[in-house]
Image 1 (cartoon, helix red, strand yellow):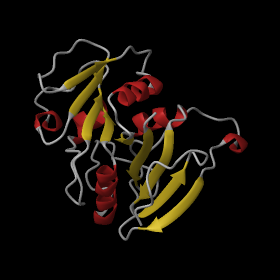
Image 2 (tube, rainbow, N blue to C red; image 1 turned 90 degrees about the vertical axis):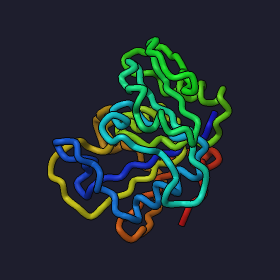
Image 3 (cartoon, one colour; image 1 turned 180 degrees about the vertical axis):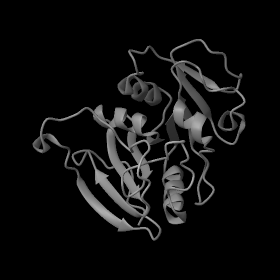
Length: 216
């Protein structure tokens, strides 16, 4: 299987956007540079269609040295328009994972997978393995990261916390409720002061090779 690592940027109170959906300035300059370093370490970056539609990310390496990773969008119902910027930019391979027959441009690859509510993270992992990807960054949003986390596929999770309080809005990660703290995940965790943000580097699969070396 590819080695999966994830990054999420959030506020002190665990929010990733305002109620209106504004998420542009949560991470500081150093947090954004770290995210671009992670992209440079990956050969593919995965996002969900909601992130693609709301944030219009470029998914390129602009603040670090390295090659742009392949861009993969999980879009079960084919909602992402073909004129989306991340599909039109030909500087990297573009792949859409969908459960329908929505047509795509000839130079955009389509992976058709069945769905049962959400497309299975394990099915996605198998498909990406078949395409030869080895290091995959799951960048967002929180629902997509949570699906890979609960499937036991994440090797590392980076949580970058910015010093601001939003008060309301979507949370970073929401997983299946647990009845007691004794059942909570307690990964081996290292913290790093990035400057504008504080990074929590969580090792989720210590018995397997780590997905990435620490970039600090």
